[in-house]
Image 1 (cartoon, rainbow, N blue to C red):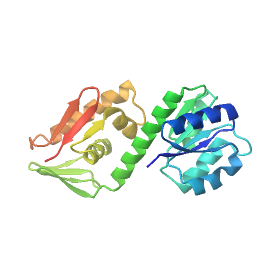
Image 2: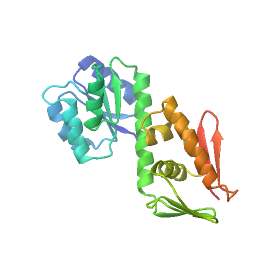
Image 3: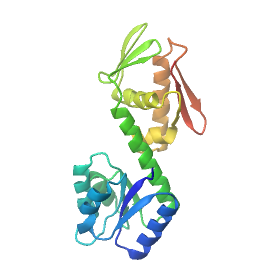
Image 4: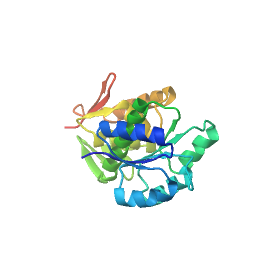
Length: 229
């Protein structure tokens, strides 16, 4: 099934290029040029992701994002803008945006950001379906109470411990992409957050040390493989 993208952009030349390029890459694109028409298009098209230009006729992108977020709290929204001030970026995120791309931009970067936002969104949907109590080898993990109970007793996990563990478990016995993990937990993949992730992975390995069958393997250049028997 094709990923459905609602694209909101009033620049005709740019809009035509982006729409045609995304369609060639296999996306289904509905292009809207006026903010007034966006909500009707949103309801009829039911997109998987929105790309929103901030400077639009009649209704600006910030307002549209708030309206979309009110109807669909988890939908990925990528802002496009020629504005460069930090305050504009912050306003974009506060109004509901999940990513921000400054003009001019390359189509390759836009596609990469679309794919990343879809991966993050799909990961969140998986996590929302996680049961409260999970058996992981010799351990019982309570995802609501953030408690891991094993042969030596119960360990109270931090909120961040649980976030990382939840994502690893949702992808158990499959590769968890390191960049996607960073973006899902911290919101960016900066060097500082990358080092933080290393700390949490070491902590989780320590928590599971009493069961040699449970492993968190690092796959260099890719991510992690959480092996659960």
